[in-house]
Image (cartoon, rainbow, N blue to C red; front, top):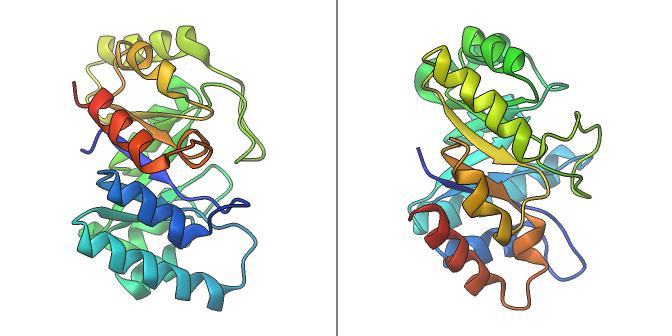
Length: 207
């Protein structure tokens, strides 16, 4: 499992394809294309461009939410939030040929997602973030410590990635809670030099 996942976003400076290129050039090897409320034709066109970039950079390409499109364009997998298609339904469509990730906010969520058949879990949010609506309760470091300790006690070994408003300065403390890595978006795209910022984050999570 890759320790750092970049989640694309559209900003005043970058579109989804450009934000993907930045992260990949900075050394990201696990990229999630997250586009909400976009016409399917536009989404497919963008997804194909991002997939090609991922192939060039030998990175894993994950589609957020859109299971059917992920299967059509042969993405590496999908990430499913709580309001997206149920994991079991997605697994029935994708079989074992695709990676499926799921969003969790509690230890009970993790247990359910494992039962449903996910390959990894995005646990959060760490703090408030402008890039995602309908957030669950904020976890903070104490929340991660508690949940990861519960996983340890129950001998749960699934890969858990921290997500939600994480900055470069949070990474060292978060990695000490037991998560395998972090997922970021704004911290990179708002940086003065986003490619260099990506390189620093990749180095941090791989220490």
